[in-house]
Image 1: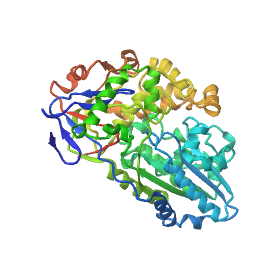
Image 2: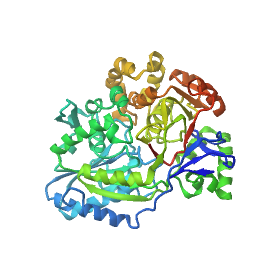
Image 3: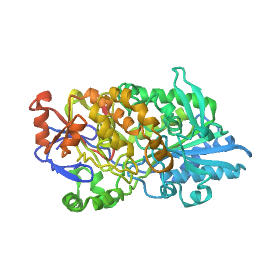
Image 4: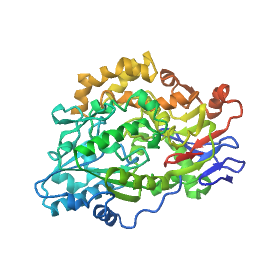
Length: 526
């Protein structure tokens, strides 16, 4: 196997079959000679003493006074934190958010602060259950604050929203009232990829639809030419304008944490290794797991994958002023995930895993699969996309038209009604978004159950806007043909069939790049 700089390798005669995720399944695929494989870098070592690193970050913050100096008796303190959409899979306990929150609460107690509330920054995501919140914050914090002073943000609770103002481009900044009226807002995040964190935390996580509509729309997504590079993302530019305005209104102290690439437990270590480095045990686990999964009933397969807990190690903790902190955070993320890649290919291949930000304890329906493939994985680059303009993207996923009514009720209607009329994001937005965003039943389910907001499937479709515009062909290997057709895509039985189907646009002998993920890799395309 010819080795290129970094973690980019070329398939030759000696290359073993490569592992490919396909939803709740795994394949071992033999790729054509010359295929370029972009592997995620090996996991970095974790911090030797995480608790000491947290204390140091709070005492020596970036661009801010120490946390202790920002607290005083009688003040109103709000701690907001990321919801269950990250990290993926969930991390082994104690969650890093628990460890940070406990330290913040310790400082608050020492400073005589007794008006403290904790808010899950769900934006328009589903409400977390009590058990899910307890898993993140730990039993002690949960017992002390739940439910009156530890709760999910409600973007539809009009009485508990504050309109902070308009940005210089006329964007509404409307956020959680408690957070906006606090003497100090502490935000605790997990920066799994470069897209996370910064002003995107409070300005989006604690916002209402009235705010989110300014950047979660088809036009903004079309002009976000890399979600992993904030300098090229119109969405991030909007969030940064909103965040700066929010920071003028309330004192914000951001605490950002980063993790390594140890996305799977040791038992399934083959998932984080390069195939030619597999031990005999790894080989047996890989081939055995790939063969056994199709034989399991779907419920057992689902339980197996959703039960995976990652052995992440914490690689960084930074605290203080939002932008100064985020600069340090991005350095840590890039150290773990950035891979230098020379040039673009005609074809980009990605295997989609079982889990994304919006199907925790649920199924990945066709709209979420599209968001994962064309929204997230297509955008895992800095500089230029891994695939050339009007090239082809081949994705592995069953694209089963299965939906969870508890979590995704509006997705069912979006799939059946909206996509039957059009698949064009701008047309969909103009014709249908407001109806779904304001539908009383969807609002009721979002507020009282565990449903994503009625507008959420629209946002997921918009995430794919740039990918749809850039690509000439999209083919799903193993995808349900009717579901793929409903979304404007094609399905193939095998990778060879998919290459044949895209040959009209990329030729008979295209250059191919396989983005081998997860764990995550960000391609720095030169």
